[in-house]
Length: 303
Image 1 (cartoon, rainbow, N blue to C red):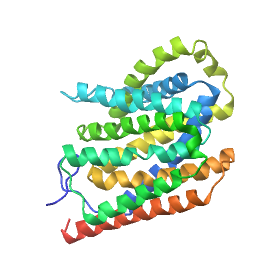
Image 2: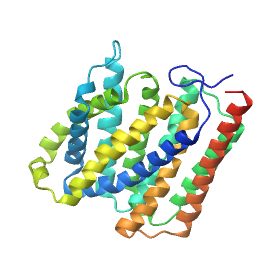
Image 3: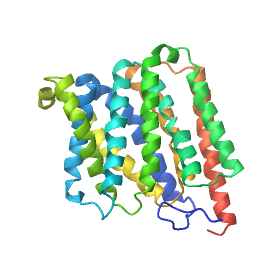
């Protein structure tokens, strides 16, 4: 049976462009948690999220018109991937110091999305793909055995909730095949701002007024989150999902926490331990196994 894309067309093999997009996506998402940590520290969780999403919505406003019959799905997608995801993520960043650990736990979105894809979309995974995913997940578990991580349980639990939102939104996104990426992210900005802005005004009074006077560094990181992680990174994700099944795309995001761990060490001096190195290498090995298995399967089917 030939694998199908989000639009129902036969999937295409992973080529150099696909892998380049996936690599760029991992770098942008890996660095984004650093950007968000700085922004949340300069503002506050709800205000930082509302500011980011409002800017996204304004940039994408010319593409606001939804295709007929897609309003409810777009609103649900925007609420989950914009509002709820950032709500839990920014709270996790506020109460935690180990940014690399949060990035690792955030990769639980991958198995959540894969389970949903298999159960609801009936996507099949080969034994080699399952083995690669297993290796990558074990790598994440190894990373989590660092004793420094267990001291931040509240942040880890909040991050797990954020990962659940992200995994769920990936499934909803599959039902929006054919919707322009910029339309998707207008609705992400709209619905996320609608949720987080009132929370900012009520729970973080006066913080929003600080936004125009932010120093250059937090403003630059906020711009990176908007233009890099949200528009370019998530746009790349939407593009890949239009060409490949969820089971093939989601494991490729497992390299992002490795980038985050390295960036956290560079920016904040977070120690890089043996468990981080071993777990990171296992995660990357799992990604390579999944990618090679995917390309081999498509080649054998003549896709």
